[in-house]
Length: 68
Image (cartoon, rainbow, N blue to C red; front, side, top):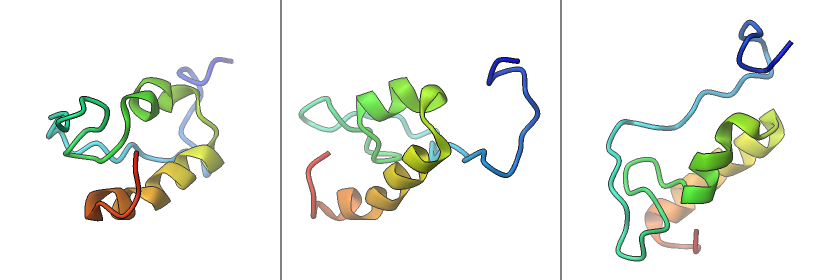
C-alpha cells in the first residue's frame, strides 16, 4: 500500500504549512512555515523522524539563528 493510500497513524507528522507561501530573498525558504524548498518538495517522502527534525529546526530558522 502506498503512503498516500494508507490511513493516518501514530507515525504521521502533520505539515507545518500555514498557507502563507512566500519565499525569502534568497528564494530558498518559505517565510510562512520556514521550510526550505527541499523540505517542501520531499515532505511526503520523508520519514516521520526526518519530519520531526525539520519541525524542530523551524523556530531557529524563524529567529535567523541558523541557515536553511
